[in-house]
Image (cartoon, rainbow, N blue to C red; front, side, top):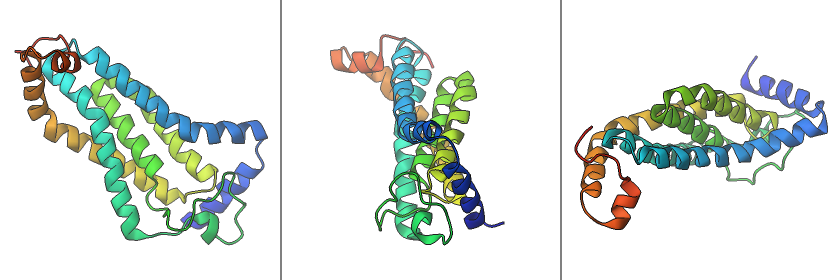
Length: 203
């Protein structure tokens, strides 16, 4: 069974599900990104009282996710894979409008963002990964369920996002920790507000 066959099976099953479930999945495919955004803000705010390294990771988490999106978009514009809702013969109609021509399919940006956010948030608060990873998987699956991505699109999106985010955080935590310490000791109200009132000399 190739990715097109699996796409047909999933979208066919999706068409047979109750309308409320279809609506819930369509809602989640967008609301999930908003939820990840809220979690980024909450964890950054809490980390403002922590040592500089922990604050740096919380600051870098959304930036790493944004960079993962940029990388995904660059790959997408290079591969130019047509959306399955136009390309796969015999498949059920997508549950949401098929994106326009030129909005390519591989990899899934939603999945890249979800994968990056799930891992980045887990780096800030490891136990949170028990929530964010399943949510990211659900978001990725929703893109196939709704008919706008192949299974391999979302798998690669998750892998890309989940790989780029920790690499970015790992590479930039040291310099960002130094910046946080500098901001906390600067006496500038905006800088101290952003970096938080946590210790300036440890971590």
